[in-house]
Image 1 (cartoon, rainbow, N blue to C red):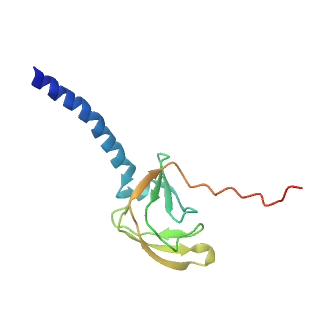
Image 2: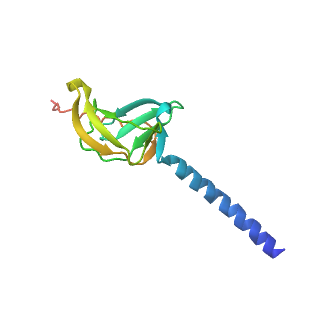
Image 3: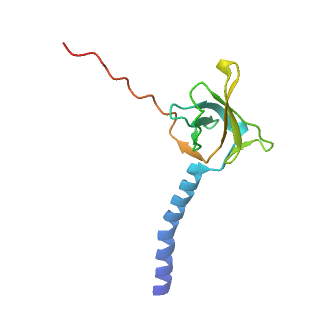
Length: 127
């Protein structure tokens, strides 16, 4: 009887921990299917952000010095997904397609949305 009670207690305690593990795993992914990407753009923090058709936002954890707002990533995949380790080209089409080099994609992390620009300081002096 005591053994059964201890086993039941262990299962009750373990289930929430397992649910937390599943939530953490769903917040980081190796790949995102390209067909589910509705919007993609570089953030002011030099990370690549995508919004999926379900409305969720994802940030790629790569560090890419050439990535900046108004630049695009050119990606080619035979499997139809953007995955960690894929090589992408950073291109600025507003400058006639200037290539700023290549970077490797990192993990995809679920985020609340695009980063916001810091508020501008009011540099006027009080009279």
